[in-house]
Image (cartoon, rainbow, N blue to C red; front, top):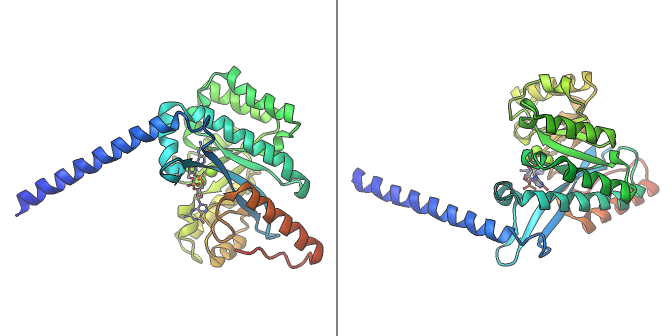
Length: 293
Ligand code: C2E
Ligand code: MG
Ligand code: MG
Ligand code: MG
């Protein structure tokens, strides 16, 4: 009957919650040693210039090679790392990896080349003096700041802390670029676009997924792109999975695309091979720049 059914589903529900909680607790415990045990992996997803069809940038995305659970998605462990504070050490680690690879790969790449690194809002509350270290590291490495893009979300700029503002100015001083990630899913207050020096808007994949000629997503994307271009920003469409989506994005003058249609995130050595292959193709036949999906 309905009553016992309700009790059963309630029991199921609380079991599910308990299960989720205990998973979170054990993830939190294991995360503490993930950096020092060398369990983190840096993956790179190509970002393509829509006009040329060439890989011109990449986004660094973190993975966790858990000793018993295998490769874990950041959607699972980043929120836990934000709560425990481990995101700080993890953020430093991936920043270093990305910067070192940018240094290696820039020789093969044109002037647009940069690697994006995601930063959670909590990574901005760190002591400014400590944050400065990663900028020092860039200088020690001899890497031009313009080879790094920091991806932040809209929420960070809505009611910005003075520390956040100062931090963004420091980035700017070093030539580091800034992108608004998942654009269109947050508050989409446009006032911050005026206030801060932003370089890129990344259109969220929920818009890209629903793109069809003339539909609502298409109109929204087009409006975002027109606005961005008038403000001097470039636009990256995330989650491009089909040739149709690519064609529609080209129609509305989107600058860059990123998604499974081109490539999923891959380990650094695989990404390097894609760059080698691309530069060979360019030598053999400059007009036939077709990327293998
Ligand atoms: P994000 O920064 O918006 O990254 C894009 C996500 O979309 C990535 O998921 C990527 O694998 C996925 N993606 C790319 N192309 C496609 C596509 O065509 N279709 C679909 N369905 N998905 C696609 P991922 O790697 O699982 O990362 C999830 C989120 O975790 C990221 O979203 C970012 O917010 C966060 N994250 C990842 N790495 C880091 C990091 O190093 N630091 C911080 N703070 N956050 C990170
Ligand atoms: Mg991102
Ligand atoms: Mg995104
Ligand atoms: Mg995101």
